[in-house]
Figure 1: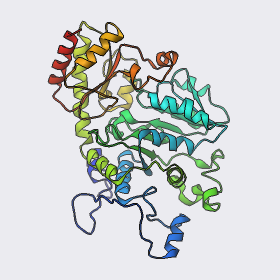
Figure 2: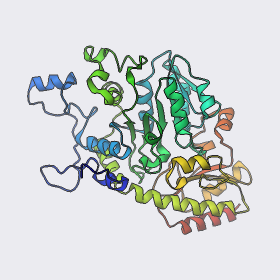
Figure 3: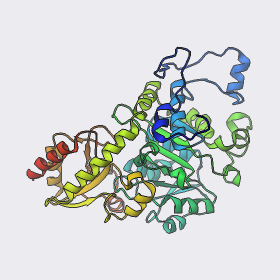
Figure 4: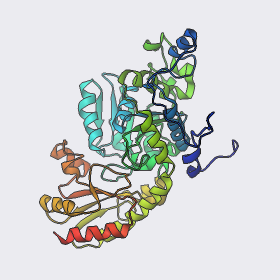
Length: 426
């Protein structure tokens, strides 16, 4: 089948799947920290990056490698790097591109944890994050200068579900000779949205969500599209002598894979935010049913959104599948089914009545989670975006009565009945 491009549903099972000497169907879990070196010369070659192999599980592991290969195949990237969480994937990506005194330009429609990492933690190490007034190409371009090293957006904002115009933003980034980074967590591992198809250069993804799909492990992923020209003169740590490897030029040595190699051999080596082999195994299991789960969840989201839109105690429903959503047209362009498995609702009433509704639900979990097999309701103002100032909350679209809803694998009629009884309590 080497001459045929496999479909997503096939790659989510066969990508990274190689039958080993045991002939077992399952991919082996390698619970090891280190690996034997047959000779000292072999070890020396591994440490100078002149030969491929395993040194230490912080850098690479056979189980994790299978997972990374599958993710790269699903996205059509040249390589992937698994990390311990979605936040660590973003951290490794940004710090592999920008140094102290340099900046990245980001959309204001960000997950609360990403917002804090950008405006507080990165600032404290000298990397400036410039939050644009909106994610429009014009507002993002207005903040780019000679020290900008990347543009960053979420394919679908968390929790507003605002869809970024990836194609237009990629054009802005490339005109400035910087890569476009897209956090594609809401793109469900590439099944709903693949930013590489629209010009993005680097993808980050919180694998904790749809990739795992069952709430059993934390994880992040970085995927390199292999299309950006690292020889543009702005990235000497990629196209220049490496301090950590005796002057090795990563771009000359690894070509289109230079960025993902940089993230592994510098970022992962120094920050150590690697997943365990068992967590990588859980991600592999989750990937095998990704498309089936997501399709069911999107269908359920439509039905629940319709119910909420027609309920007298619901002030507003924000669902990209509806034509009145500001991002509906962009969702139809970039997202399969023109929708996602997440919606937001604003209840009539107060903060107190909103909390009462959440605590009256019997089937939906009150958690800071999306993409789980369990339906989840999250109150962003008191959880994911609690640390933001009132002004920052307003800019991100967070109100006291806003709820983020992520549909799971239950029968949606049971979820609707649960909402009905909880709303009756108000």
